[in-house]
Image (cartoon, rainbow, N blue to C red; front, side):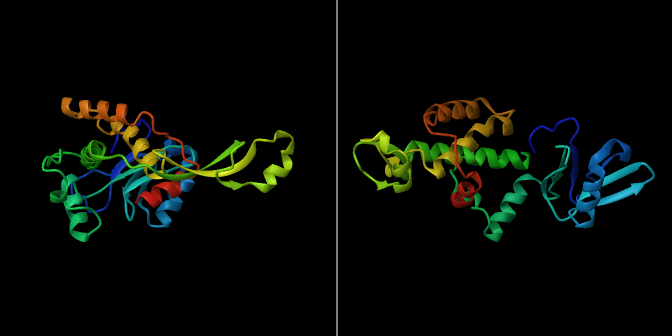
Length: 229
């Protein structure tokens, strides 16, 4: 996981062997306590209460649980690092490591988020060196030349602005939903790879330069990420 904030609740899912649960004071959880109880009732976390002492483990969820105050429960997987990626590859949910570049850039001791970040870094480098794909996207415009679908409602409201005609045009650009998702992910890599090697830092610097002109804005980021998967 990325570096934790001081107030975050970090724990492992059930079955993590000697990995400790999070323990703390119920009083310190304040207004987040009812939400924590609800997550426990839903089976997302396992909650043990003894007086004012509370212990929390993950149950059926690995990742982040955001509490009403903004504080987060960070639940780590019981399967460490590279083994988890290999298992996902075995299940067909993740490409086998042999499908990546010969120098995958990950090691046995790397954390889960570091493995994913380094694999992404090498894959994006490979894509950038070969070809960054353009595609057609729709964009609104107001021009004298009609090269798209006229927005009749907008035209009726803005007749005084003729000869500029409001329309939707399709243009070929690098600012596609897929590229925007990749560019935003690239911007997150320095946080995930805070202890990156000199070679990885050079890769990130070169990639940021190559992708600097690509937009980071998306009208519907959830739909873009879903489509990119």
